[in-house]
Length: 264
Image (cartoon, rainbow, N blue to C red):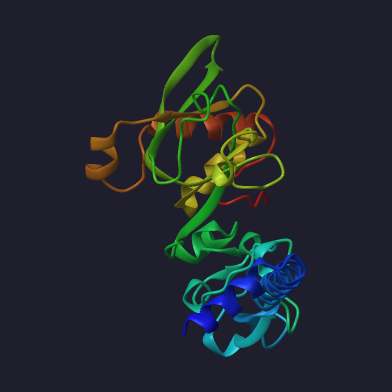
């Protein structure tokens, strides 16, 4: 037993032996580390891809998705959705599309309400979408949001007198868009409101459109408080006198819109 221990001592105290063992251990460590890095880099992970071309604003269904294996190293540098549950029922955003076999990037996928034209799906019968031209000042520094209820005030001059009064009350704002038609609140900053979109009964829409063509008539949005939003009733014209002023000014222009625009 003592001889065996002595042999081992001699073996490990020999400089050449120690050097060789050290080189072997070092190579083994390097090989092990390299193998680990390679396996970690190429170790595939399943991600969803499109089974067909999916157009902008199209809803994504389960049938539109299949799973394929992708290198982990690629996924680390790509903002790709990896969970099917984060896709089904969502929509492809405007201005883009998903090609067949393409992965789903987070910037391409939105909720339905984020689509610019989704508001048209909820318009009740007898109502029409109207766009009111606004700016940062008339929206109280962009403080009017979708879902808020507002009143519309009209100001003009009649017989040399200034007229300013509530015109339409209880309008729910459906969207706030910039001059390019983009949702102002899709980003944290940088977009200036240019249009308020809301649905009004068709008769109200007609008067609002007529007012656009009459010089000297201004329509101003006025936001209300939260209690007003939750307890107010349906949209209604608040002032018949203002309707008559619009009609009179229209007649002065030589056109009669009182029958819906048919001047016969």
